[in-house]
Length: 163
Image (cartoon, rainbow, N blue to C red; front, side):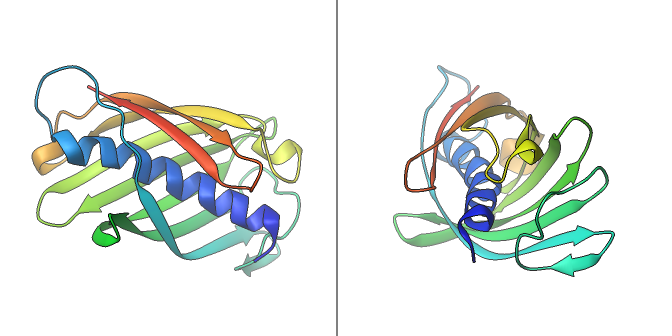
């Protein structure tokens, strides 16, 4: 997997998991927003373009191309669930991304962001943000937001605030 593909995978999955982790640690209970980080283990990525599908980054993406990914959600090395993501390339070099994260025995969480400028360069912007929109089960009332920042090693640092 090349650096561009790794960065894309990390961005998609880390956002979902980091925001999910904050909700996992407090459920849908009331109180002050919580900030938490979690680990993500990518279990696959697929780029779907007019030329076909590929598990490696195909180069510049255009409006309508899609990116699918799946991950194991880990807390202290133990799998607590999984997620599935889909990003659709929109206009002006942006991707609209949705994550459905499932926590075993507890419910699911929905996360969305517009990844502004993602397709204007090989690695996309160094920083982006999005929202936690709700979920099911214990997470039916989850709301909040996150920011993601690229680190020099190609990973992302996520800061999520869950209400």
